[in-house]
Structures are given as C-alpha cells and as structure tokens.
Amino acid sequence: MLRGDVSTLDQATHWPVRFKKGHLIYDEGELSEAMYRVRKGCVRLQITGQNGARQIIRFAIPGDIFGLCSDRRNTAAEAVTNVELIRLSLHSVMELCATNSAAAMELVEHSTQAYRDLAHHVERLAHLPAIDRVAWLFEFMRKHGMCGGATGHRRMAISHRDMADYLAITPETLSRSLRILQERGAIGEKQRDSACHSSNGAVAPA
Amino acid sequence: MLRGDVSTLDQATHWPVRFKKGHLIYDEGELSEAMYRVRKGCVRLQITGQNGARQIIRFAIPGDIFGLCSDRRNTAAEAVTNVELIRLSLHSVMELCATNSAAAMELVEHSTQAYRDLAHHVERLAHLPAIDRVAWLFEFMRKHGMCGGATGHRRMAISHRDMADYLAITPETLSRSLRILQERGAIGEKQRDSACHSSNGAVAPA
DNA sequence: CGTCCCGTTGATTCGCATCAATGACTGTGG
DNA sequence: CCACAGTCATTGATGCGAATCAACGGGACG
Image (cartoon, rainbow over all chains, first blue to last red; front, top):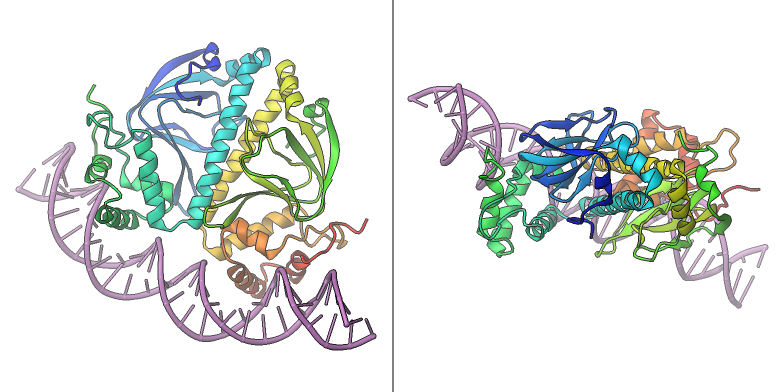
C-alpha cells in the first residue's frame, strides 16, 4: 500500500495548494506542469464528450496521487469538495527520477495501479446492472470512510450527480437503486443521508 | 509519436518470442516479469468478471508496448492472431531506468498514453450508442491498417467476438450495426469482409 | 418571500440483450 | 472424396433494463 506512506516523491519541490468545491484544477489538453497528492477532500478526474456528456474516470481521495501526464492533460480535474493538495512540480519530479530509481519505481507503481483500477471499472460499467454498480460504489465509499463516518465529521459529500457520472447512469436510476438497496438493508439509512448532504456543505467544519 | 521509434528501452535485455493465435501470454494476477513490444500481429488485454463476462481493455498492435506492471498482472494478455513480440525483462528495464532517465520518461509516456486512451474508451462505452462505437472502431482499424489493406495481405482478422467484447456489445448487435453502416456506405464492403476472415486465417501469408 | 437547484418519484419509450434458428466455413474421420 | 460435427456470423422475435420526459418537494440563497 502506498497510500499514507511518506513518499520518495516528496524530495521533489512541492507545496500545499487549496481549491474550492467545484473549481477546475486543470483542464484536459492543458500543458501539464505539476502532479498532486490529495491531503484532504476529494477530486474528480473527468472527460467531457463531444455530446456534452461527462464521464468521471476516477475519484482521488486523501493519499492518492493524480496528474502525472507526460505532455498534455489526460483528463480534467475538478474539486468535488474543498480540497487541500500537495502540488509537485513535474519538472522536478522527473529530475528526481533521473537520480533516484525509487522515485521512478513509485511512479510506475502508481501508474499501473491506476490503470488496473480503471480497467476493472470498465469491466463493471460494461457488465454490471445499475443497482450492482451502485452497491459496489457504496461499499467502496464505506471502505474508505467516505460516508457514514462513525463520528459524523469529515464526510465527503459527493453529489448524486457526480456518483451517477462515475457509474455511467442517470441520477434518476441512482436514486431508484438506492431506494431498493435500502429496502434490502444492504445500505444503511445513514450512508444515504451522509452522501446526500451535497448542496453546499463544507468538507469539514474545521 | 512513440510507435515505430527505436526505443531507449531496447538497451534492456530483450529477445523475440512468438505466440500462436488464441494462446495466453500471461494471466491476470500472475507475477509480472516481463513487458513486451508487439512486432507483428495483435494482442488483447482483457479482464474476466466474476460472472464470466470478458471485457477487452485494449488491443496492442505492432509498435505498441504492453505488460508494464509493478507486481502482479493488471490484466490477462492473449494473442488475437499469431504474434511476434519482443520480450523485455522487467528487472532489467527497471535497472535501466535507474541509470537512464530517458528510459524512465519513455515508461511514463507510455503509461499516460495508455491511461488517456482507456479513459476515452470509457467515455465512448458509457455515452455512445452501439452503432457509433462500431463506427468508431472501424475508423480506428482503418487508420491503423488493421483491415482492408490495399493489397489484401497482412490483415488482422479480429473476430467479431473480440470486437464485441472490446465494445461491450453482443456479437448480434455488432452484426446488425455493421449491416446498417454498410447500407449507409460508411463502411466499405471490403472492410467488413476483411475483418471477418476470422476462423483460422494466418496473420500474413509470409 | 420567491427563485433556483437538487433529489425523488412516476409514466412511458427505446435500445440492446436474450433466445432461437439458419447458413457458411473448417477441420475430421470414415 | 464425402458425410460429419463444431464454430462463427447472421437474422428474426421477444423481453427487460435503463433513459427520457414530466412533475413534485425541499433546502439554500438572494
């Protein structure tokens, strides 16, 4: 597990940055000058199709790294919540890799992990019915403490719209699926509520 | 463009290998000991869900690199046609990266390119109707000379089953889409035929 | 207090999967 | 050399799942 480790990459020049909920961190096609590690909050990596449909490719949560692109941005990145990030200059990261093979290894590790996760996400989107995708997402969120945290603080507050765009379903279908899962008891009432505090709640009261 | 370049990675120990059509190159979850560059033929990278459904994540064609995994295999790899590959020891590749930053850069380049392609594939699968996905795939194959080569030789011969599993549709839907596209004239008759010579045709008469 | 956005719920439609049958082709064995 | 089974592409008929369209309620904010 890399998440939470003190990273070799921190030897590259880096400093903290913040973004407000909903703000663009970078857009697809931009020149890539930095990569990021999430400290607090949640970031969505997404693509907008020609038809205007948005597909969220990945949620980056505390401990995650994103934004490693060789030239142009693979995807757009937006703040799902207010976020606190560590910004690492790509130039200095590449320099570091030239001298420190452990850093290069770490990049490879992250890349392959991200690829594997995305590949499995494709498989789910392609072959799981909507309700199973929703159940999977909530199980995922529960595992990562993104909803229904025991003490009730530090909730991720991902909007249904974002979840739907991640799962490639409509908000209506998401809503219906949640009701069915609740009736089955597969999802606690709290989880549903916690994830729904979306309209404008801050990430953390802090 | 990396495809076709003489690669810095070739400084790592490597040698040619061959696989027959349909044979497993590596399976998901295996320890990863090597990466590959495609010389001739076509390889599919795929995942098999719990339900038994197969999702093809990517086709690797001549010039492409695949199999860069940090520990275990991300996906399975199988030969779509008879293939000729260059096998690069992962161990020596990593050693090379420790001393040669250009090699590390090349790995990053490949990783981010593969990620971008997969991300866009997700977007297409999620938001394009079946017929548009099929049209896109044939356009893609045409661009890469994978079907309807002018002289008729060196055809890739991807089975409809494989194309369907790549596009996340059934072979029936693929067949119907092809007929409609033909009637529209969007796809030449030849392309359709060429891609269908699937049962046991060799990659190239050579 | 009124407006806007979001989540929810219902009614309907549509696209694609599924089920089923046929024909073409390959390789096999009598 | 021909009958055979096996696989794959194709086509048709049917059903289901999720999108779409539409309406309502509630909280946030000006």
